[in-house]
Each structure stands twice: as C-alpha cells, then as structure tokens.
Image (cartoon, rainbow, N blue to C red; front, side, top):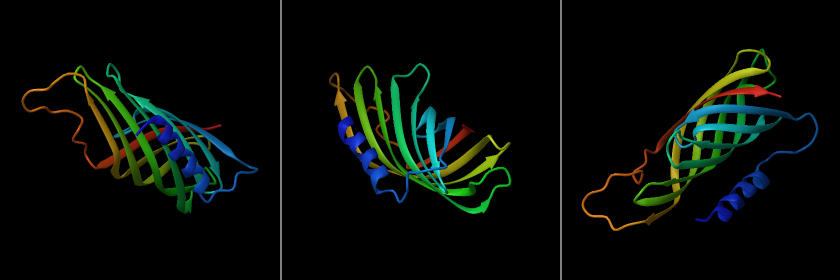
Length: 169
C-alpha cells in the first residue's frame, strides 16, 4: 500500500475517533522503544481521557523507518500527579519500511494494546504496553534474484510492546 493510503488511514482514525477537539488541551512529547515502532519520538494530544498520537522511528545503522498513529482511551483510577487515568487501551496503525541489499519491504499493521502510565512528577512519566498486531498489507520488492532459503523481516512476531518516557508540555 502506498504512503498516500497510509496517511488517509491516519486521517480516518482521527475523524472517526469519539473525541471533541476544543479547550483545555494537553500536549505530550515522548521518546521510546518498541516492537514495530523501533527507537522513536512522538507527539500526543490529550483531551479529557483520550489521547491522539503520532510517532516516527528508526533503528541505528539500519535502513528501516516506521511511522505510527494511535488513539489511547484512559481508564481506571486517576493518578495523584495528573488528571489522566493510569490504564489505557490503545489502537492504531503502523507503517514500516525497510531496505536491504536484496529487498525493499513495506508493511502496514493494525495495533491493539493495553498499557499503564506511571507518573514520576506532574510533568514527567513513563508507560509500558503490550498487545498484538495484525498485518493489513505487505509489499516486498526484490532487487535481485534470490537462490536458496532466505531469512528476512518477512516473518514478523504478532505480539508487540512498547516503552516510552513522556513530558507534558
């Protein structure tokens, strides 16, 4: 699937999300690591107990790139250091592109995770999450003819997880 259809998917998630965009917003910036987001940086917008976010990631010394968009619905108890509830359910989409000497691979995944935020101060915290991903689309282009068995990123693990540190602006 081309990047245009990925961006359309992100737009649809924002439009179809049950979120009202007005007043008393809160932005978070984050940095993290995860399986499917790699080493990443992100920006999140919060309205009441819902967050919309986008992250961009890569891996050092590798030709791999990822962009993710997600919606987090916070539930459970309210933290003492923030107005946000500690637990959340997250759904989103992830686009991953890698290139090797032999192949160019492009993937699109749907993500579903559950997670918990832990606040260190009223401005700084971290979260952990775990869930599953489903491959929506895959496009592999061979650069050269291959002979014999090949191992590559083509077989991906369906469990995914993430860790991020965030700062409330």
